[in-house]
Image 1 (cartoon, rainbow, N blue to C red):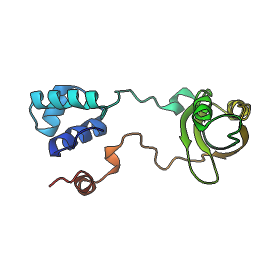
Image 2 (tube, helix red, strand yellow):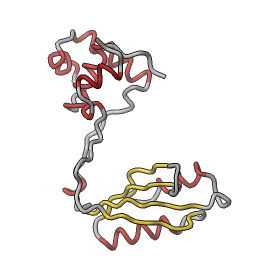
Image 3 (cartoon, rainbow, N blue to C red):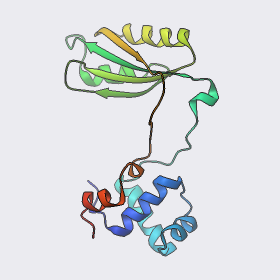
Image 4 (cartoon, helix red, strand yellow):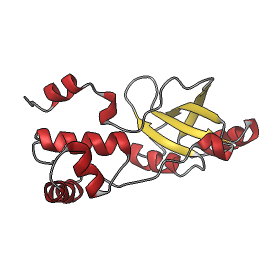
Length: 166
């Protein structure tokens, strides 16, 4: 597990999260912390896994992927383990997220599709996995919030409490 975060760490991480910037000079200016401190902290964040990777976000709708669906997947574990089924579900074309959950449903799969035909193809691919008993698909009519960034979802006060900052 990564070390304890301090106020400078949270400032840097929140700036990166909010602005999608990895340029050391820009971060240093944005958080008013020296470039060398930002460099050291960034190196530490990558080494300890706090920052997994840097990516560019592509708008799926600009690519014609207008359909978002939540697929509730019910499975029979006599055919395969949860790990194996999760891996197989994650390989289905168009699947962006696979959650293994507790409750009435075994997995929740989030996928993007071009149209109804593409959605039918993805559902067929999911139901053809050995061990999948049935699915329930929920079509997203509109997206109210879909935020992949993490720290922007917290207020300053909540972050202070979360990381025991002053």
